Image (cartoon, rainbow, N blue to C red; front, top):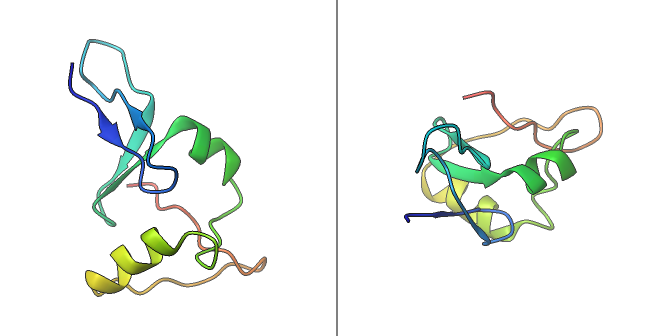
Amino acid sequence: MPTYPCILCDRSFQFGTAPGIYRGRHIGSWGVEICDGCLRGNWDGIDLETRPRLAEHLRGRGISVTKNAKGLVNIPSS
């Protein structure tokens, strides 16, 4: 059964591989997948200093991000 790696923790998770199984989210505007655990753990935003793989991915795609009041980057809804 196909799985997708989470850009934040690199753990693989199922996403739409069977009816009703979505254990994470595809973030289309960033071109990444994030697992449910990382989504819950970063509900208030992501610190790119501690997530260099995501920071590099965004830079490589020319995606600029804005930090929220806490100095974190909000996860887009799509």
